[in-house]
Picture (cartoon, rainbow, N blue to C red):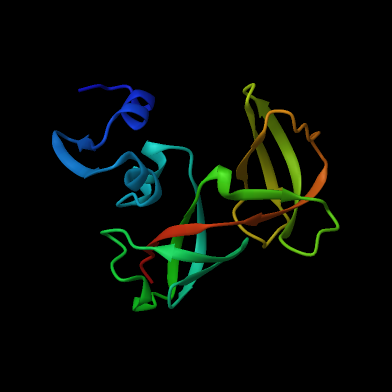
Length: 165
């Protein structure tokens, strides 16, 4: 047993997360990270960009592009076509592209926090292109100055949760 998240995720075969003294979710570290049961669990397990999206079959139309959906216990069947959903996009799924790239949405770099092996780059998408701020994880050797125009897109799969309409 440990209270250290990094230790639990890197060493355990199975992890149980407790909320108010009850097991909220149990699974492999990978399953907890990629398919958390709700947005609060997503933020608890790691850094999370939670984007509004529209679900069409097994695809989520996010402000950063189309992503294939993963099923989570609270999202139910991803083919159920909930009109509005919240999509989980981890910082390592965000691609920062050149400002003239054909893909992605326009954004401005707000900040970069250097961690050695990697950096977290915070960007502000152009008005109407998504949430106020999005965080991306990039190689520590990649330096992007604040106020630099870029384009951002998302890659990989997402877990979604219905938004009450």
